[in-house]
Amino acid sequence: MDRAESSAYITSMTPDASTVFDYLSTLQGRICSGLQSVEPDATFQEDPMPYPNGGISRPRILSGGRAIEQAAVNFTHVRGDRLPPAATKRKPELAGGRFEAVSLSLIVHPRNPYAPTSHANLRFFLAQKEGVGSIWWFGGGYDLTPYYGFEQDAVHWHATAKAATGVHYARCKQWCDEYFHLPHRDEPRGIGGVFFDDWNAAPFSDCFDFVQRVGDSYLPAYLPILQRRLPMDYGAPQREWQLYRRGRYVEFNLLYDRGTKYGVQSGRRIEAVLASMPPRVRWAYDHQPAPGSPEAALHTDFLRPRDWADLKA
Image 1 (tube, rainbow, N blue to C red):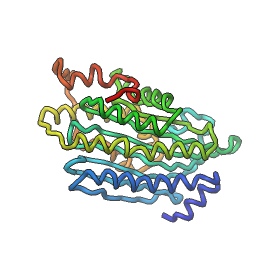
Image 2: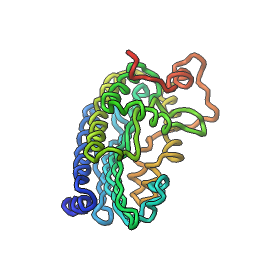
Image 3: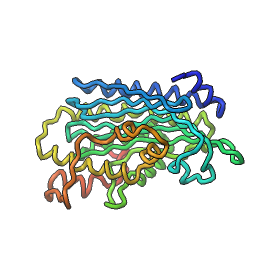
């Protein structure tokens, strides 16, 4: 990819946008290095592919590890002459306008069932249409999907998110709880975290600073949890439960996730769009965990939204 050409195009739409490209591109490397630190066997492999108009898809994939069964950390830069429907659903006035999108999205599926799955994404959109003008906004956040409930992990995850988002935490936590919810099952996907969209009410520099605080806090939020849970012993029953619960993640991504829909509609490489899917998953008809078991506790209590950041583990 011609970095100078890409930067010039972004800068033509807003003077500060090229810094988003640089930050998210660098953050991809930092996150991959952090995750690699807990994986002794497999390594991240990069599979870049240029997109039209100077864009690029640059997924980095780790598969078959001893600690991390699969992880996908994808940096994407897309630009085109027509915004996809997923990007204009809440902004119909921009339909048909040209656009620029820079994003970083990731998912981590540990092998150990006691270690939770985590997801994060950060994105920046620029849209321009004759008669409407230029509009920009940020979106993103991160959430945690445990298979077994550990209060220590939940408190740490949310306390780190709260420290990063400050006065915006309550709003972003509620946004996350509402977004990562499976309506057809009426249950949360996990214990949430922080989420935001259409983030442009403040000056660009303030919004970008907020996004960087969120991005920089992901590894401090997640790595200590992995380091605690990956050494724990587990057996076939715990593994089967993990594979069953992974189905909830797949259901949400395919039925509701705006990022997945955007990736498909914008013509992104489907292998990169679906690289976040778990390598193994199972469904069981009307599965009911044994009463009083840790698995049942996850269903009936642990996933219930609460003020985790204000608790003491």
